[in-house]
Image (cartoon, rainbow, N blue to C red):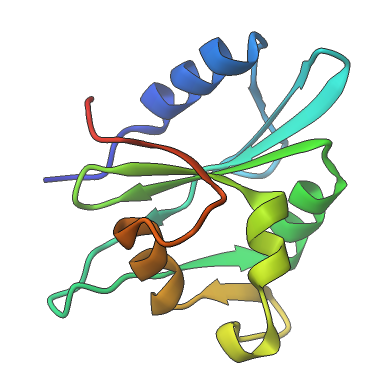
Length: 134
């Protein structure tokens, strides 16, 4: 199985928020729009599910800044198993601590295995929906 296409994810979010979403210049997985006078930013990272059942994705410093600066921030995590987890980034941000991130000069946050595990296990209350119907 492969990860859902970004176009499918974006269409669902366009319907949900009633707005158009356009690519943020220079950012292949980042999109923006305006919904009810609120700026929305969407990030659509992808993660393989490795043989041990774990996965991860990186967020760059710039991606985190864009998500932090928006009124509505959605992380649409596309997994290799075909699922998409729609996460309120503002809620996830509250849980990001030095213990669960790796920081270097380019990557702000590496969402380590616990994040994907929590998303897949339904243990994170910031998940607004899970979509496996593509």
